[in-house]
Image (cartoon, rainbow, N blue to C red):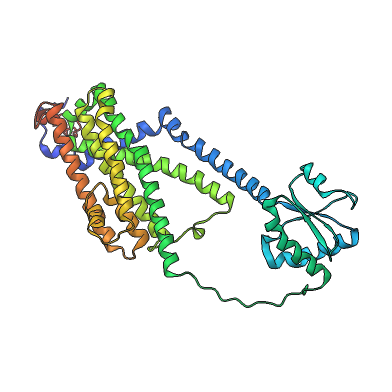
Length: 415
């Protein structure tokens, strides 16, 4: 039998920091993705989205029906038919400004006030009398709205205005400078709001996962096996991958609702860099904002020993992130100012400020520089958090170095 070599492992036989981080990332990603807790977490935001979409569609339909009250006609049959023909002739020219007509079957000597008192259907006003002398009966708030329309319909029915309209040539402009800037500001603010909500909703998973593994002593085993910053990076990228899965599912549901409702991106103000690049920048800045906030939460998790301590320590960070978001939102209206540049440079507000720049300013080089700066900040914060964890939890600045050699390493070849 060939004896097994008892020579110690060399540093080259161990996994690199990147490979070790990918091992942790794959482990956490698979464990969280296929857990029942993540499934319920994924379904949680879908219920208000679906209910909100259905309620919005139903509410829009109800509002459309209610906001267009009917004008009832109580005239002789000949006058009613002529008024209906005038309504058909004017309808295409005036769009939705004419109220729908409802021909009443009541005798022409019926009191219109009695009919309105019955509150029939969606009738808001009644025109009676003759075409030459129409009488409008309606509540005070409908009289001003209906008077001019009834006069136009009666005049058209009498032939006082043409029933055939000449073709009108039109000249349109794409937009003006003021309206384009206003639309882009709306897009910038909406993008910042969505980025903030997704970051705050999903970043908390990093903290809960770390505290759970601290309680089970799993994190100490990992820290003894591989460098702590590799563990932190692995956990961050695993949670980022899980977050992208959640965003993809939610995005498909919201996109389906928008598609059924007849909305598309062309109906929203277009950002300066265009919709495709703005979406790409949104994904990149979400990743950086998530990693930055997640690195802070990992550092907090290294200081906390119980769930109560986690809540106590994470509250200031959450409030600070809220203030950062408000500052970045305020900077949108003052592009190029010292305050706006500060929001661009400070790492935690930089993703929000730069996403707004993507909506307001053309050019992509600034975004490449900003993403590199944010990535550098992530590396610094993760390194600082890992060092703090080693000193607070492992009670050593370089704990576990001798123990790591036997764990997460390749087996030496048999002699």
